[in-house]
Length: 104
Image 1 (cartoon, rainbow, N blue to C red):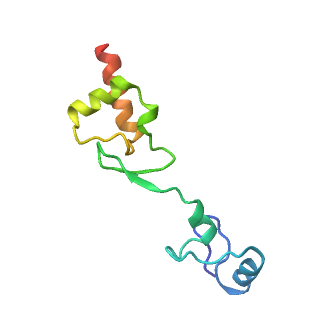
Image 2 (image 1 turned 60 degrees about the vertical axis):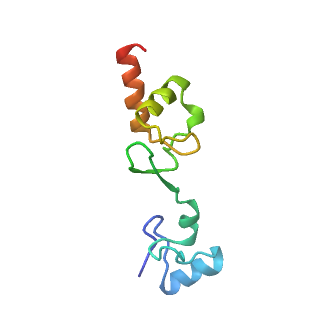
């Protein structure tokens, strides 16, 4: 029996039909390995504009939360950096550490 990889709800068979009838749970249209409920709650992913790693929305840091001096440092090394895009925590920590070590 196929189950959702995220919450283990049955997606096929008799139990899958029961879950569908009672809770309107069915395989996601975008990913048949998870249910439609988990697909709705799945965090979106963003590409960090500094290191280019994929990061979950939960850990993405918006520019509004970063201090202005860190933003200016990032812009010096990455002029393509934009305030309206996300930055990962690891890159922000790197710049915070850099500021702390050099006492800027």
